[in-house]
Image (cartoon, rainbow, N blue to C red; front, side, top):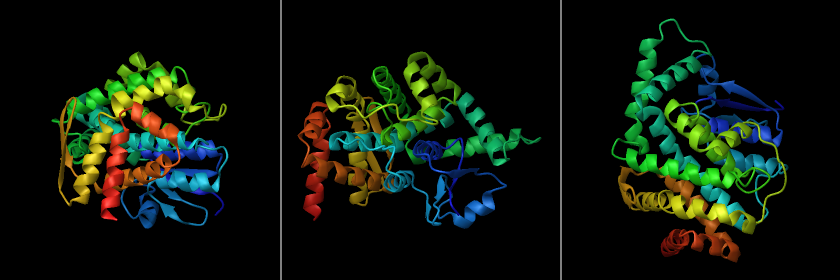
Length: 341
């Protein structure tokens, strides 16, 4: 077997994230939509019942999108998706985790928390499972899918109580990112980084749903164009210098990432470390409460280790995180790690 095989779904942001990365790298791969027709093959390979699932040429199987990107980046270094500047590389990983673990909550809430969006998404999911065709008897199973997904809202932190926090968060982030992309082709300059693949995949899903799509097309046209470009991205130039990015990149961190994702992910990691079942954190838009998430804690811990190593070598990263009110989270995490050593 000479090519990769990617089991995924058009309705899965993580599937789109990996597919776009494979396309960017120019890697030969087979895209396999998960459906009833492909379910037997999928289950024979899967350890967990979610996509994406990537089968490498050596038959290794992965179901974690960030690990897929890291392995592909190592196997196919060019075109690079890792900025040469260690500070930018660290900032990219922070934003990638923001997309995977926080913006995904916002996307999920918009899709399954709003009735018109939920109804359309339920039908899309049914059509996908049916191999791209709408079954004759589609109304009841479509509603059942929508209701089942709506029941999962509290599990991912997208409960009714958390809706105001999430709604304010993604709109603020979109406005800030739109202002940044007005000045830059990709988040870190002339080519996409890991952050682009993660964030674009979440917004690509929002553009499928009527409520957020209408808002994005009206208020964030540069995000809309960027999402189209990120379906099959091409390097248009080198990564930019951090000084050229700071005017619009710093507000993205200072006015959103530092106020939602970082307080939440720190509280979640602390809760998991303490063996607690729930995590509660006070954010500007209100108190955010959900079940502690072990996977999200592991993802943040990996980001924190990378950021902590980079801070020892990069004054530029320290200056940026300090200016963006983010440094204290990583300094705190470093102290916790050292205390447990």
